[in-house]
Amino acid sequence: MGRSEKDRDLERLIPVGTLAVDVTKINSSKSSDQSLSASSPFSHHSAKEAFGRHIHSWLSKKFVSGCVILFPIAITFYLTWKLINFVDGFFSPIYNHLGIDVFGLGFVTSIIFIFLVGVSMSSWLGASLLSLGEWFIKKMPLMSYIYTASKQISRAISPDEDSHAFKEVAIIRHPRLGEYAFGFITSTIILRKSSGAEELCCVYVPTNHLYLGDVFLVNSKDIMRPNLSVREGIEIVISGGMSVPKILTIVDVQSILSPRVGKFAVPQV
Image (cartoon, rainbow, N blue to C red; front, side, top):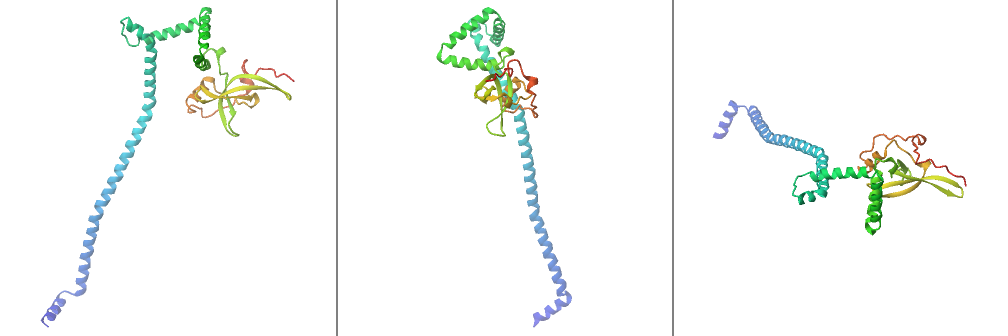
C-alpha cells in the first residue's frame, strides 16, 4: 500500500504521457546520433576509394600515353644504332688492325664505298664486274636463290625507272567477292585461246612484307589502279596497312598507262 501511494504522488508531479514523450525523444536522438556516427566513417571511406581509383586511372593513362610516344622513338634509335654498328663492322676491323680506333670511321668508309659502287656501276667496267660476280654467285646452289630474291626486292625500290620490278600499285578482288587486296603489277602478257586473245597483268600480292606472296594473272580490265605510287604501296605493305590513306581514288586507266604496261596490241585469233 505504501508503494502505491508513492506512485500516485509521483504521477501527480510528472504526468505519464509527458514522461513517455521525453523518453521517446531521448531514444530517437540517441539512435540518430549512433546512425550518424556509424555512417560518417563509411561515407569517408567510399570517398577515399573513389579518389584512389581516379588517381590510379589517371596515372595508368599517362603512363600508357608515354609508352605510345616513346615506343616508335626508341625502336627508331635502336634500329639505327644497330644499322650503324653493322655497317661500321665492315671496315672497322681494318682500322683496328692498323691501330686506328675511331668510332664511326668504318661507317663513313662504308658510306663512301657504297657511293663509289653506285658511280662505278654506270660505267662499262663496273657493269662487267657486276655481271661476272652475279655469274659466280648464281653457280652456287643456295646463294643463288637468296641473291635472286634479294635482287628482286632491291629492284622494286630502285630509283632507276628502267629497273623497277613493280610497275604499278593495283587493287584486285581477292580472295572472295566483296573483298580486295593490294598488289603490284610486275608484267603484262597476252593470253591466246580459242575464243580470242586477252591482255593479262601479273599481279604480285604480298602475304608477308615483300618477300612472300602469290602471283595472280588478272584481266587488265578487272584491275583497279589507285592514286598511289609504288613507294607508297610498299610502305602500306611493310606497315601492315597502317599507312593506307583515308580516301583512295581509282584513276582512269588510260590516263596512267605507262609505255611498259597495258600497251600491248591484242591480236585477233
